[in-house]
Image 1 (cartoon, helix red, strand yellow):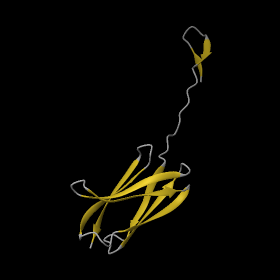
Image 2 (cartoon, helix red, strand yellow):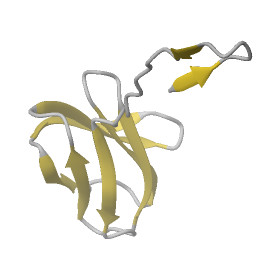
Image 3 (cartoon, one colour):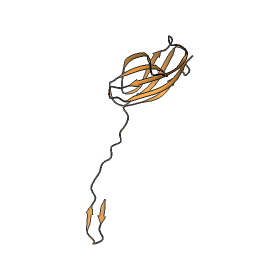
Image 4 (cartoon, one colour):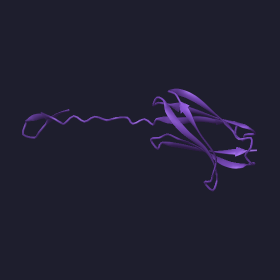
Length: 109
C-alpha cells in the first residue's frame, strides 16, 4: 500500500501475509441416527494418512468402545458396530494424534 504523508513524502506500508488455517478433518454426517446396529460417520480429511482414534462414550464420559482407523485424504466412511451397546444416548469421538477432535451425539435404539 502506497502511503502519502502530510509533508508530501510517500512510502510503502509493511507487507503482511494471512494464512487461512484449515482444520485437518471435518464431520460431514453421521447416520442413521437413531441407530440399531451399524453407525456410519462420514468425515472429510485434509491432511494425508491420519490414524484416528474412534471411541464411543456414554454421557458420563466413560469409554464403552475404542479402536483406531487409518483415514485417507478426501471422504472416509467409518463404520462402527454398536449392536452390543445398550439403548441410550452416546458420544462418538474421533481424535487425531495432533489433538484435533470431533464429537457428535447419537442415539442407540
